[in-house]
Length: 314
Length: 314
Image 1 (cartoon, one colour):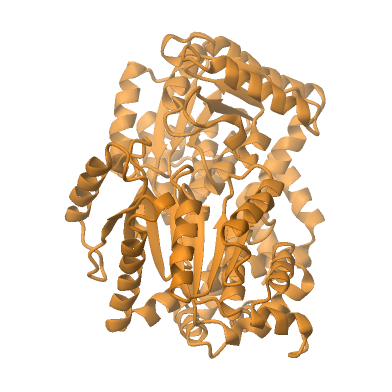
Image 2 (cartoon, chains in turn yellow, cyan):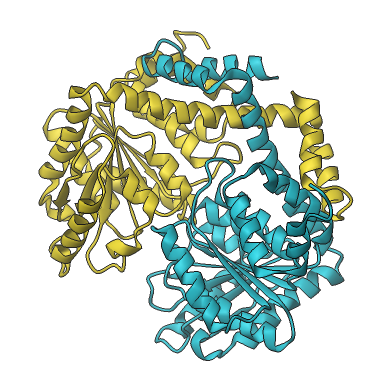
């Protein structure tokens, strides 16, 4: 890709239309999308990546919008990536973006994009990582990545964040006991949203009890912040808590480690998909289907089938 | 592995202790586990694999137990694999199995195993597939695979089933509109559990409206069955609906296709992990970490890093 390609230039300037076009290319895995990302990579690395995760109904979007408004007041530019693999209609996602955009009054400093489609290769987490890179290269100071929360997809998505906020809501049946282990491990900050509802104190007490049991390897004491997103209550405290964690990492020289660790995972994901593409190109999809049929008929065991595919590849 | 190895023989007989030991080997990815599965593969292929999926609180375990009891009355042996990536404590899973086992009064015809830990390589879905193969080879007539439901993990797990039941519950906020697209696509039978609660008819009407829009490629009309699992209401109808789907596939010569299609996906998963293992063995974990550090420092873009790992591998 020509370094002075107009699309590249427009993305670097943070032009919203150019960003939207580039993201569509990434989502569709168009041939030029990798070239585009390669060219933009040196411009990235300055944004703070803030992950927000919680169950459906936890109020992630409202909270992300409130954080974005606060950041705008502080003269920071913001990108929001809303990842929702549970969203049934991709059309709904785009409509939702428009509604949210109007809340920010077509503010050029806020760019919002929903992602709901599952790519055939690499998946949603990989596409979200690429979009985060793009928004970073476009000069956004903070990139908010919101994801709906159960399952590996989501853990993969927030794993690209510098700091991850896990959102709980009183009385939603997501008692602390039922929160999955993976999510507890990724929380750098807990947010109890809709904290004006009954039961907020109980959730907080349960969280404190749980946090008192374990200790994090990095020595961070996971803070708990209560918010009421629609009126902004607690949102400055939440943002402060997230920023404190990044300052904590930076002061101890751990931020570079964390970023390297995230990149390591991302390289593994890229490598895994690239290897598979290569193997299928060498062996052919047809051969894979034939082997699968033989395995289904019990003529061949699956391990020997994979051995034979491996022999052709490496 | 010696074909007359005592563990192999005991697994083939369906000995519960041998099964438990073999499953632990699979979960821990011990060296012999693949050998074990290779040796048992020719004994597999006779069981019906029935997937049950739904949100936390949908009553999957109670329903699985009710189906198991019914199958036992019909002189069928049953294996249950309860996959729950949201389970915070692996100890809890084992305790839960014991409690559930006692419901079946140490009935040798029912074997229950919970899986909550996420393997480093291949993950939960791959491990669940291996355990399903093991229970099949151990002569279980039906293997029930229950999974908690949001995310790719779960879709991967039910993708190994011959027939998949998606469980909804009235008034749990999982309105039909909010059900994710992926889950709708995998449902061969819908079950409205806890159907004695208010709102069951509304859920049914919404489902019917939704089903009336689309048509499945295979021509199957997805049935909707209402159940109250604790007293067994609707459970025979649910099992009949699931068995009808398998009969439907068999009558049209589609069952072999479905099984081949499932195996194709499984071979892809195995190949992907095997290739990655190979690549890391060739390049070394250390080199991967070094590349990740360089990418994090923006000295190298991630695509070039992966290119260099690929060059060493293939």
